[in-house]
Image (cartoon, rainbow, N blue to C red):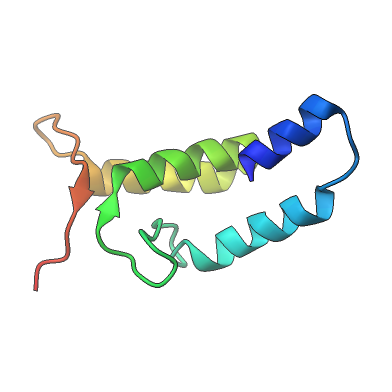
Length: 95
């Protein structure tokens, strides 16, 4: 969606607004939990991956959804960063 938005703006066209809005809506409904953890796949939360957080934060900042981006940043720090200053790449579900 960010790429589509950038192409639309770069070409200075009015085309694509509906498709971009549909994509963002789908993304929000299918790729996140209700408390803003990014899913690895639309039907699977695990593994929780730092790259999913990063891309989601970039996307929501680009769309001026700063509250969502802030929630994602807080969740990333809470889950992926430990007290010793280590940033985890993935958080796996342990059975």
